[in-house]
Length: 406
Image (cartoon, rainbow, N blue to C red; front, side, top):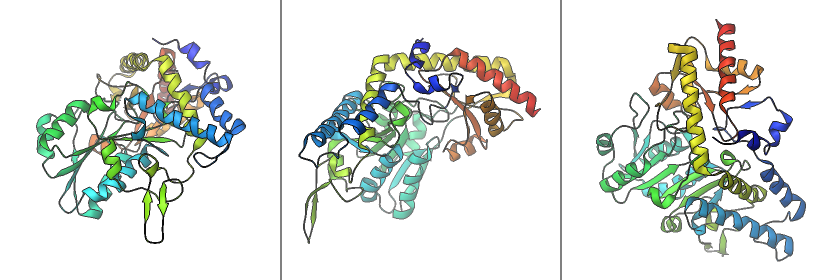
C-alpha cells in the first residue's frame, strides 16, 4: 500500500481541512502543492502569450507549454505532434465528432457506443447520427455490468460501422473494459472503423499506452489526474488528425489568410485556436511528474486493494441492504452503490455533515442507470490519498445516515 500519510502532506487542502475525507476523485482530483506552485510560477514570472512574442518571457512560456506536450506524449506512448490540448475530455470528444465524424457519417452509416458511457461519449455521437441520418447502436452490459461477449460485438458492429466510441473505465461501474480485445475484434469486422476511447477514468489511475491499445483517438482531462481544471487532452493518429477539419477558427491555428481562402497549420496546432489555458497546461507538467514519482502501477494496486476492502466491509456492515453496481473483480477505485430504502442524495447530505465527500446522482450516465433499474446511486471513489481508515469512516457515516433516515 502507498504511504498515504506522506502523500496527504503534499496536498494543501488537507492542511486547511485535516478532517476531510474526500471520496470524489472520479469527479475531480485534488491538487498537490507542486502543481499549484507551477501554476503560480507562470503568472508571477512569465505571464505572456505563447507562440506570438519575440521576447524572453513569451519564449519561455512557449517552451514550457510545449514541454508539457512532450511529457504527455511520453506518458501515453505517443508522439508530441499527436497531442492536442483542449478544455476537457468533453471538448476532445466533440472535436472528433465535429472534425471527423461529420465527414464520415452519412445516411445509413453506423455509430456504435456502449450503454455505460459518460454522456460526453454518448450524446455527441447520438446527435451526429440524428443530424446526418446515421444509425446509432448501443452495446449492452450483462448483469454484472460488463460489456457483453464477442458474439454480441459481432452482431452489433458491421461493415457499415464507421465509428466505435467506448470508455476505458466506467465512471459508474468502475469496470475496466478489455479495450485491446474489443478494438482488435472491431477492426477485424471492419478494418476501416475509427475507434474513439474515453480514457478520463483510466489515465490518472493506470499505465496507458495508446499504441498498445490499438485505438485511433483517446481523450482525457488534466483535472482528474491532479492537474488544473480547464485543460483536456486529445490524442489522435497523425494521419487522421491531418485529415480532419478544424474544430474552431481563429488565432494561432492559421497558416495564411486571404480574401479567397485560408490555409491552416498542421496538427496539433490546427486544433488549438485562440489563447489556451496556458498556466493550466504548464502546471499539468507537475501532475505528470507527481504521478510518475508515485508510480501508476502502485496507484492502481493501491486502489484495487482499497475498493476490495470497501466492498467486503460494506457487505459485512449492511448485508443485503448494500447493492453494488458493477463487478466485484477487474475494477478500479470507483465504487457506486445503493442502500435499500434510502435515497443516495440523503446519504450524501448526511455524510457531508461529518465531512465525508461522496457523489450522488446519475453521474452523467443516465442510460446506464435506467438499464440497471435505478434512478440514482451513491459513488465513493478512491485515489492515492485515501486509505482504509476512510472506508471505516464512510461505513460509520452511512450507519448514522441509516439511523436518521429509518
